[in-house]
Length: 549
Image (cartoon, rainbow, N blue to C red; front, side):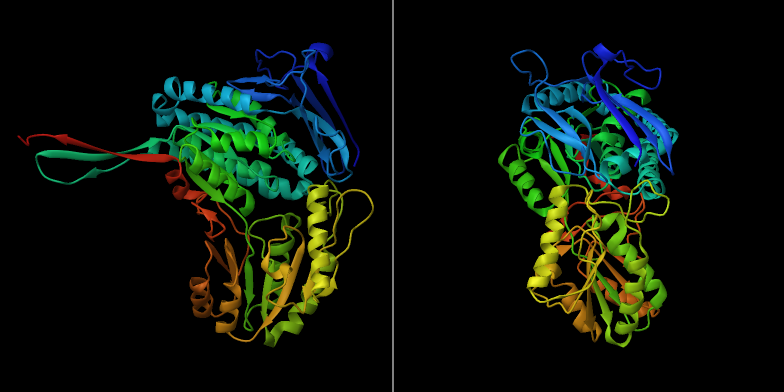
C-alpha cells in the first residue's frame, strides 16, 4: 500500500500539534504525520503521539539520564517488535513496516492521570456538570467523529489491518452512533421516589462512581473505545484509559477530538503502554473506583484478582467466546451460508462473538458444506485499502503464530482441513479462511477461542443433540440459530447459555441493545441502558417529615 509517515519532535520540525485550530500548552511531544494515497482513500493525518493527561499531551514520566524520553511505544504494521525492550513498535499490519512510535506510560503516569481525574471529578465534572452539559459535549464529540470519519477509518485499517470498507461501514459508523446514543442518555440519569409512609420522603440517586479505569482491546479499537466512553461520561465519571499497545492510533486521535469538543481537563486521560505495567497499575490502583476491561478471559481473571486484592473496585468484564451457530434442516441454506461466513470471517475472525462452531443438521450438511466452501473461496484476502478486499491481515506476529498453532493442533488431533489452513503471501500476517471438518468435541479447535479466520463445521442430528453440544463450553457470549420455524428457533435460542442469541442472522449489534456474556465470557453488559448501571452507584435518601422519637 502506498503510504508515507513521519514522526518528529514539534520543537524541531515546527509541526502543528493539531490539524485544527486548537492549541495545547504542549512541549517536546512527537507528531505523527501520515499521507494516505490508496485506491480507496486519499488524505493526510497528523497528531500527537504523547500521553494525554489533564488536557495536555506529555511524553510521560520515564526520562533517561540525558533528559530525553526513554521508553517509546512503537506501532507496527503487523510484525514483531524490532527495537527490543526499550521500544514498543506500531507497524502497518499489511506489510510489517514501522508506522510510528508513541509514548510509553508507566505506573507513575497512572498516578498523575488518576490525580487529574479526581480533581476534575471534584471540580468540573461528576456532579458539578449537569446532564445537559454532559449531553452537549458528547453530542459535539459525535459530530467531530463524523467530520473525521474517513480519517478514523483509515487509521483503523492502517493500525489494525481491517479493511477500510469495514472500518467505514461498521467500526466508525457504530462508534459515532454509540457516542450520540449516550449523549441522549446523559440528562436522563435519575433515581426514583419510593413510597414508604406519609411522614417520610424516600428516594434514590444514581450517582457517578468516580474515577474509572478502562482497558480496551486491539480487535475493534475505536468501537470498544466508544462502548466504554459513552456510558462512563454520560453518567458523570472521569476516565483513565489504556488502549492496546498494538493499536493505539485511533485512541490518540480521539483524545484530540475529545479536547476539541471541550471536555474539561482531567475528565478523560489516555495512557499508551503495556498491560503488565499500565494495565496492572490501573487494575490495582487504590484511587480508581472501577475498572472496565474487554479482552481475553485469561487477562480478565488477572484484572479481577487485582481489583479484589486492592480496593475491591467494581469491575465490568467483556471476555472471550466460542459461539455456536446452529443451522437446522429447514433453514434458508443460501442465507445461512452467507451469514455463517460473516459470522466467522468478519474482522478476520478476530471477534469475541465469532460464530466459530458451525453446527449443521444432517439433512442439509452436504449441501451447506459445499456452498459454504464456495462462499469462503470467494472472500478476497488482501490489502486493507484495496477496493475488493474482504479480509486483511491478522493484527500481529503473535496473533498470527497463535492461529497457526491452533490450525496445526487441529491437524495433529485428527481433524480434516477442508479448506485453507495456510498463509497468504510472504509479507504481512495474512491467513486463508479455514474450514475444519471431522472434529470431535474434545479437540482444542472446538473448545478454545482461536480468534482467527478458522471455523469448524459439525454435523448434528436433532435439537437435544445440538443444544448439548452448543452448551458444552466454558464460554457463553453469543449464539445463533437458523430455522424458518420460528417456534423451533426461539425455543432453541432460549435454551442456549449465551448473553446474546441471534435468530437468522449473526454479529448484529446496536447501540441500544445490551451485549455481554454468561459463564466465563464476562461480567456486566455493554451498550443500551444496561451499560449505564455499570457506571452509577445507587444512594438511598430518607427524609423524616414527621416521625418523632
